[in-house]
Length: 439
Image (cartoon, rainbow, N blue to C red; front, side, top):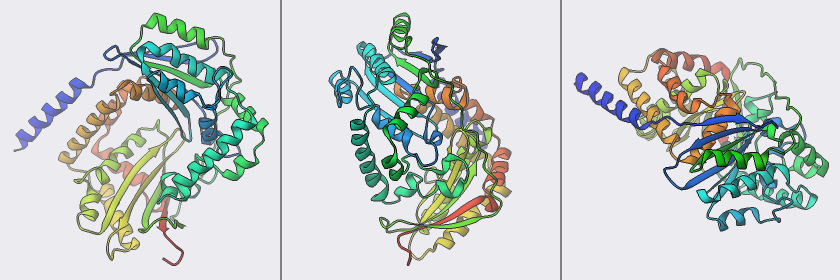
């Protein structure tokens, strides 16, 4: 049986490796500092143009939180050559789709068009970079949009404070700006003056603080000329000083309670501070998450959900540029108490800290990450995002091909060591997330 198992695994491993084709790309800089990455794939007549700015919620100052996310919306308002409210209409009228998103570390804008509209995609992003209209009317409009988003996704949504971290970040970070949520404070946005928005834009939304990615069906020489024509004359901004704030280590378990009137079932959460996404240990923690809660064969699912102690379990590592956050938790079922869930979760952590996972479980884990790697590089839109993020947040564009080797190098001993070092009772926040104060 052992022979058959290894042979089957080897065959599956080889089949995955065959399809995990290398992502070819070229990168260079314009004279104004804009970093350009080109990935040519002529298999389908589509192309993605994307710009990632190295600015996120962590770059905001005290009393003015929410600016980066606000600009995600504001820079769709219009430009000197695009009337207010027409950005999305232009994209859809030309057969494309577009969107944007913001994290603690970066803001990402993208369009995907039929490849004969590449020039339009480049023009739209150059307009956003060079000619945005930032006035009081646009600020007032987007202020209401952001408030409605906060009401819909956080204030009135079950578990919204967990999903969007407004109820978590301030407990695990005390000094670093990660303590604030990406959506920020509505009071801060209300108090901000127009000149503060203008100053924020001038500081962060310059070509030397951005990367442009073109991925898909295009001709390289023509595309390079268009990029130079559309972006080459955009003035370079001042050099951005990066956040460099160190957190003191957590040395004793911190117990907190948060309340959410939108929920019916409470949650027990363990929250740990983890290393930067550049650290190999962050990759190892991804594997720890998979062991605990990925699929019906995972440890916490079998121990808690199958045995009717929990309705749902979760464990994930959210690695970011400066620090990461590891969150694990469970929703109780029946008469199970939050204290019971805490004990069960601690038991699973202890097993990881004291016992090597089996060879069989390890091989299954490696195979899963091979498949994840293949899927992450499917489609030009995904590839554009990965290329931009690897360059901006990890300083290594080549990780789009090499990152899988980091996962392959992780050993069973690494998993045990990392679980011991980071999932430590004395280094965590333990949260009871309840419906009301009487619960």
